[in-house]
Image 1 (tube, rainbow, N blue to C red):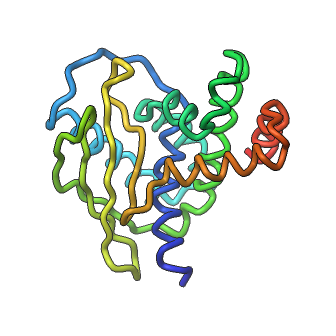
Image 2: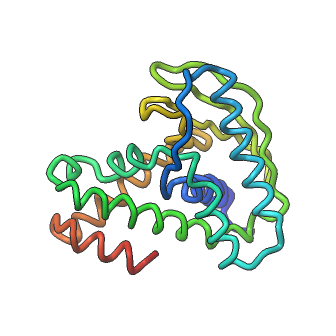
Length: 202
């Protein structure tokens, strides 16, 4: 059995990566408790279907790219993970980074989905926090104690979209920001080189 905390982080990261590739247009509506919870209920339902489908890894990755793109505020996720470098990046660089990062994140965690066959997530409630809603859920993995997942949902983009997951106090958005910062530092701030490397890894 893999390390429990790493397994939990991988599970949450897989969810985040699957949802963080792009955004499909849909009608804007005022965000409230019910709509925030409904968004995560829909996402969780589709996650369950794919994880337990018995499909090949390649097919699962393709299905995640096709199905979950509508649930994430990818612009916010990408800009946050890039940190201060996003302020110096050109529009073309941000566009390229957003796409490359989304694919990289999806494949990085998606390749571990076979560990989570039989998993289920139950949405248990939601509450407003500052300018967004926190949707609470409990994840049940085979051979693991249940653990809490917190989903952050905002309508800042004009749509109700997920932008972060917190797993037992571990903020995945911040974790990826630290990792992207380290990758950029190793390339001496060369964002184009980093984008190329993300594409290669994806």
